[in-house]
Amino acid sequence: MDLSPIWLTLKLASITTLLLLLVGLPLAWWLSKGRSIFKIILEAIITMPLVLPPSVLGFYLLIAFSPQHGVGKWLLNTFNIQFVFSFQGLVLASVIYSMPFMIGPIKSALQQLPQSLAQASYTLGKSERETFLRVLLPNIKPSLLTAIVLTFAHTLGEFGVVLMIGGNIPNVTRVASIAVYDSVENMDYGTANVYSLILFIITFVMVIGVFIFNKAHAKSPLE
Image 1 (cartoon, rainbow, N blue to C red):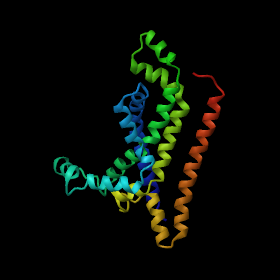
Image 2: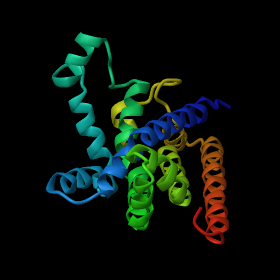
Image 3: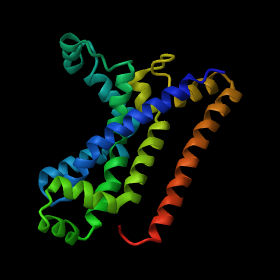
Image 4: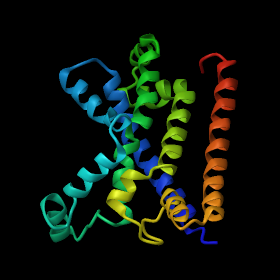
């Protein structure tokens, strides 16, 4: 049995989660501080993948990054980069589609922290960066872990958006969710069951781990 779709999916989920962690932490921190019309609009855009059909997002990404015109043509001619029907296209789509799962929990957790934590840190001469990394983040460990796991697990199950922009190219864009669909289309229910069971076990173990960690952390005071 070909397990390359599983490995490709795990690779995609890992890269997507890492990128969103790097981008999402400072963005969630910025969004949690104060309100403005610009922040409201940006937050609405970030949240859109939660309610927008994946195929719609995938369609617009396909149009935007098509090598025949627009941004896609410019990227191809200038940097020789093609997002459509490529692994990097899957990463781009996954980052956009899974962004609310990373930013949402972190932003909410930061907003719930007492303002006195940051103020005390500033009083001791710590910069905003040091306060964020050494004071605020350690106090939102459960939410941070939840965001990481939700992002990773959500990426594992993506179908519509990755199919639209990545297609179904073996060892390049054929992730597990597409392999399941292909197997069912070919009446190969045994293979579809194996792919589905592997994804189910991975996500179930991750979610159980988060519940156990959060329950243990809830019994201890803020660090």
